[in-house]
Length: 284
Image 1: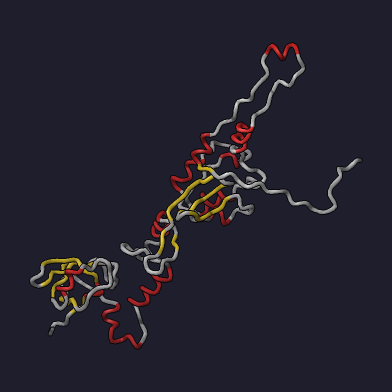
Image 2: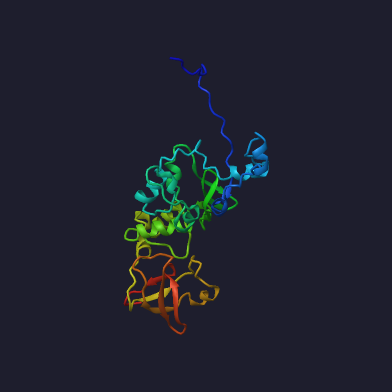
């Protein structure tokens, strides 16, 4: 039986660069109308009926390509997003061979948190997560499914996940970790801040009461120093050395990100960072 002639060595196919466009532009594209030979000419000649596209129409049609040479429609991206992450942001019905449903690239931006789980599990790099011009973009074969602003750490300037992704993590770990409301910190800076506030080094024992402090309603306190928190205003420098009473504690752990309400003698009631306060003993 004749066999097709194959090259002696494997040949890598040439990969054509992907056409970048937004999801909205992708969904607006429609198939160009094929120019046809008029009926009179069809009756009298054997000329080709379909006249073919011009260059502009060909380029427009190429933009509709789903790049099956790159994306092999394995569906792992949809499974990871839906089953593992529980987000279900990818609505790519054409990936299901047996039961194809509607595909809408625009719906991804509504729920996507740019976590990168789909891109990390894509074996052919059809799904990618790129950073450009201060934005983090999720692309499928060049189509921008979602883009979100890149955040940076307030302390060291390191790049952080998107606000949607950080909110997702906070919701998942609400019972295990505390959320910083006023500072945007990376993991390293957050660890250093936590270690500073909860130091157990024997050399820090004289200050351990101030490092882990329990404030309760009715505690007598003193503003003994200026706070490093951004909530500390210049006028609050006049409060240093003033005594007061805790009227509304918001937390039980000393943290510059949390404020408590203190009624100061002769200064009224104010919400102050905890790192500027210390509890007074009954004899003070």
